[in-house]
Image 1 (cartoon, rainbow, N blue to C red):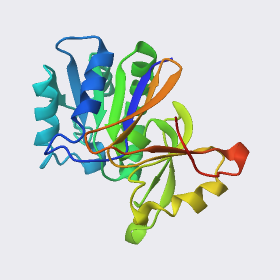
Image 2: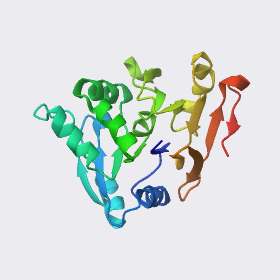
Image 3: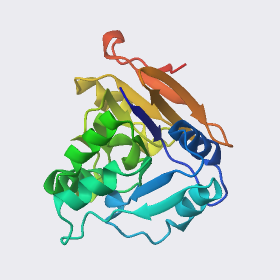
Image 4: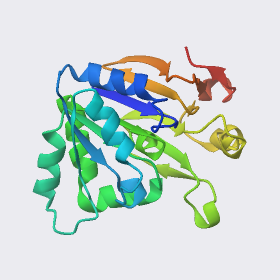
Length: 223
């Protein structure tokens, strides 16, 4: 059992996702939690991520980054950083690069330990998909969609940005998968809190949909 909050997408700059950040901080149980920001999916380029820091800091959190492309980091360094955090927040970008890097560095093992320890695991887009069994991302050649094996902490095939027509191919593609689909619109979040599942949205709303395998992957609103 552990806590995972996955966000389908949305805007940081105007606080659209602020209610979700408030929930992440609340679930930590800390007044001034430590947040570890993991921008691997963005190739560790944090330009434009200032708003993520600002939102968490507005809520009393202290934020520090973990740059897993830094070849000077040992596994011991990585594990120490991850296990000492109250909250992990993974940024968006290329899911395949994220998972390849996590496996190469051993960060995948450290994140599993963090989950068992009770560290809050959260993130946005690829930073949401990474916690699930699989993610559906446009990280293939020429931005082709593909399924990526992820950490497998939750047994769903996850798709973000589901309000966009560009991502609607998930409805048909997921029918080939072993796991039920879980599709999140921008502004929507899926929350797994020690065995209890719920959803919420930011200031501009947003929904979460389940495509259950046992029902032929027919889309239904997750409530």
